[in-house]
Length: 188
Image 1 (cartoon, rainbow, N blue to C red):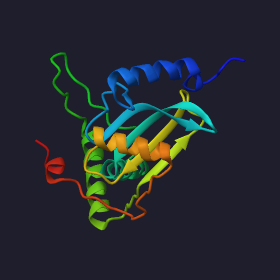
Image 2 (tube, one colour):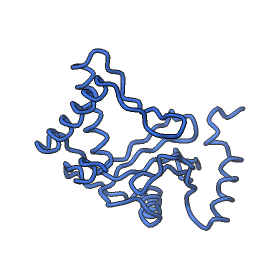
Image 3 (cartoon, rainbow, N blue to C red):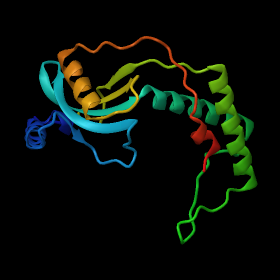
Image 4 (cartoon, rainbow, N blue to C red):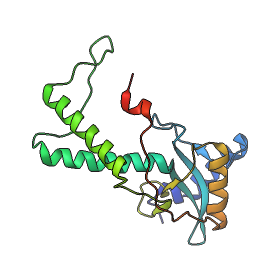
């Protein structure tokens, strides 16, 4: 019998266990340029249907989850208003300097910014803590979770893994809305 999903393969699980033991931590951060103090992608070992499996986890702050939801809605509204809109892509010249946006891209950018500010001011989008499991993930089991914490660090990750594996996670069901920080809006 061949194992289709390598995250269920006992050899891969044993290899990860060995790496975790050497590193003296219950998780392995997946190198990703998206990792930050508000988002971390990592592997850990847990149980699924009575068997060990590798979880491919994405853990982020509730503030980041809120910002993503608001931006997605604003982008959707921009697509409705600007028929040619298919995302704003920033390009660099040969020296690594940002090339100016076209006037249409500028207009779309301002529209999105205004939509975000309006939704935040009206608290039109509210989010709550969650844990989503994807059993059809390409490696192991996918896990997305948003927690109402200021940042994601070693302590938060360890606590999350322990509570997840012990089945003792208690999610805050309060609905939250966030405001962008002033420096985010004003820019440099």
